Image (cartoon, rainbow, N blue to C red; front, top):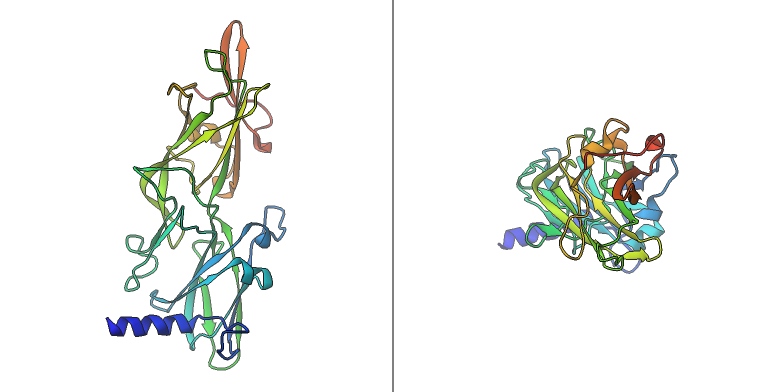
Length: 308
């Protein structure tokens, strides 16, 4: 036990950044720069990231250090300056993890890509249900290309950790819905089913499937508009996630809507960072009809009409 405590202290010192009042010498040999670009190649890191968890692994893939960079430090310098021993390292970084929605599970004796022992629970659940996930970001940007750092015997090294989205913002808006009683004031229950519950440290989504549940308030009583947003893990075209919408009486207002059916082949799923879905109820020939529109340029030619 004593040996483990000593080792933990050494690892902490290995990656510690020295501040003005820390009392340690301002000695660094490794600088990591954080960056994140939007689709237009604009730098947006400081706009969307509030803190970073940086993990450092040796040439065998085992953890040798971990550093938390809070928002205050990132506002001064979007990166981290460290002192590392001579050697080859691999780095992984996660941004915006919160204690209320995510949990990091580590086993320092296993390779960091061992997803059974090293992973992030991307939404803390109660009974298999979570309200929402964190707006996560991950570095390196290219998951299949590790972020490798070679620390020389003399001199210094600088490396850029480019982040990518590790979530999709899913906006759901319901318009024109009234309960059979005529009321539009009650919130609607929005459930997203079959959401992956874990990320490996290679950003591979896996684990048991869970549901995200939120209540969409009535934000416009005149036009009967309900709206809410989710942060969900990235997914592929074979996703089995459905959107289920129920009223206060527990009744489905439409049949469950398949994300796979909505997405079709109109967009490269790997590039999807925002999915705004609008469900509009109208009356036609005395019957209520629901049409689904995806408010992205790829869908502007028509209205999506899943088999509901």
